[in-house]
Image (cartoon, rainbow, N blue to C red; front, side):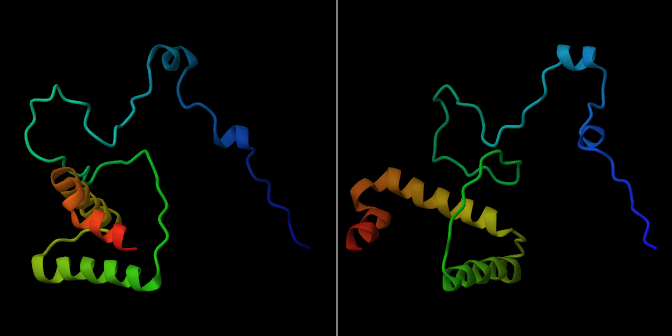
Length: 118
């Protein structure tokens, strides 16, 4: 005869781990994905956020060939340049490059030209 296992309730799993008085006086610390806005004295293009916790999420669907191209680029960076990066960081870096180019060149940027050609 099979025994029924008792599982903890959701209230037991998600209970507060500190006193209510302490949590009311302290605000939870939030990690930002990008640096705070500066006073405008920084020179140069924006940098991608790199290896930090990202609070925002965006889903992008790609074809099988595009995914293979991303994986190939990731493996090439690792093999030939010794850079171990994940796909997310690779995409963020590529996106930063394209957006910086768009900001610098405007209508003449390859991004605008490719989108106009479609």
